[in-house]
Image 1: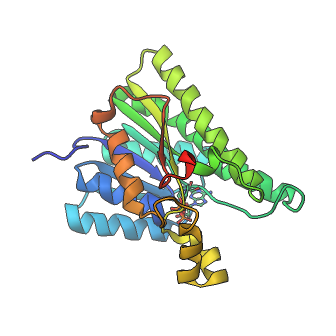
Image 2: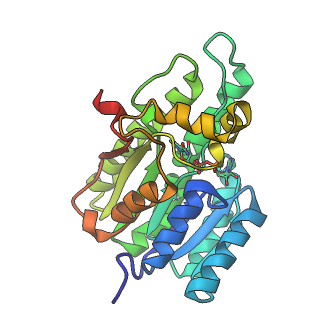
Image 3: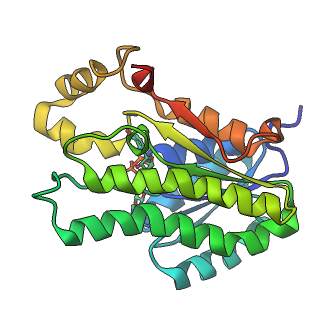
Length: 258
Ligand SMILES: NC(=O)c1ccc[n+]([C@@H]2O[C@H](COP(=O)([O-])OP(=O)(O)OC[C@H]3O[C@@H](n4cnc5c(N)ncnc54)[C@H](O)[C@@H]3O)[C@@H](O)[C@H]2O)c1
């Protein structure tokens, strides 16, 4: 039976671990070719090797990419297009967080977060559309956060950057529609998910206490699993979501319902 994304060619940033790796594994398992791009090239290569061992050589590729650097985007997309025979799905996933409230956060940390979380989506989309035009239907999946819709007292740069990704996704959707392209753009908004991004908290409180603390903030009572997000990405990457663009999927265990 063909997979749900058979024939799709996906370029995924931040694919070396966490959600990026989970989404790559899921898309590959459903028939897509995947390119994992990360500043951690060894990590991306390891995930690609694991996928190739399971699905056959040529299912996954790894490329070095700092998502804040335009020239690296140009090079990585060109390489991935050649390796996969096209690009039809772009998953803008790489992202970081820096602590500090509005008074203690440094300008340097503010700029770093905005650059990794927002410049990345701008640059990636700007340069990937050239390739995606040639392989329609296409889908752009931007990983925002529930923190892009709901603010906290101590994460101004993360909140602002993820809110920017949310609205940028809609602007991209309208641009593509106006151009008559069959390329959709949507955002995903997870709450706390079990990935290494939570490690600083685990180090501070211990794994069990940290996860319980976060879980208490979620109506469903626990943090999410990477596959909860990978399943949403699979839906958005596939043609099953062909009438969905400029929209957001909240995978937050009910937080935003409160
Ligand atoms: N895990 C969560 O609780 C959660 C919740 C909401 C949103 N998110 C978002 O999901 C995305 C993935 O998060 P995760 O939990 O997998 O995080 P993670 O820290 O486990 O993985 C992030 C990946 O991005 C890569 N990366 C960081 N900076 C980069 C750069 N400049 N260029 C290229 N790659 C870079 C890292 O090397 C790493 O492989 C992020 O955008 C994050 O904000 C995560």
